[in-house]
Amino acid sequence: MQFSPFDLTDLQRNAWIYEISYLKQILQNQSGQILFEYSIPRLSKRIDVVLIIKGIIFVLEFKVGAKEYLRQDIEQVWDYALDLKNFHEESHAAVIVPIF
Image (cartoon, rainbow, N blue to C red; front, side):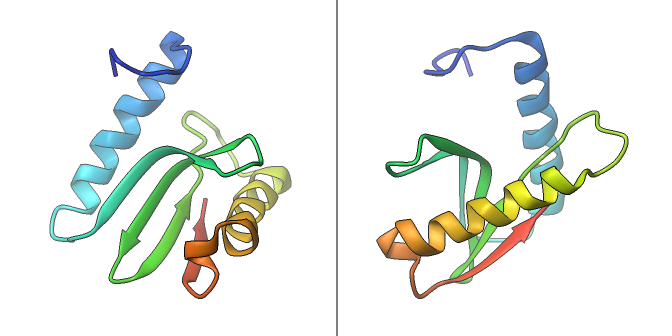
């Protein structure tokens, strides 16, 4: 994280630490790829986490510290999944699963 191209506030740094710890725990027996803060080409948006496991693309949006999921949070992760499907050529034919 010390070489991150993004501005790191304590809140952001702590969120990443939580996300990494959580994902290590739940993915310990999985093989695949994990991408943090994935930039969607040409849209100036960043997905918190993209997991590619067995050819399936999982789009994860974390709301660390949130007490509830808001409709806008659900729409955000759906939008990211649709953006990948429509604007990322390698993802056109892939199964994409939004997770919030």
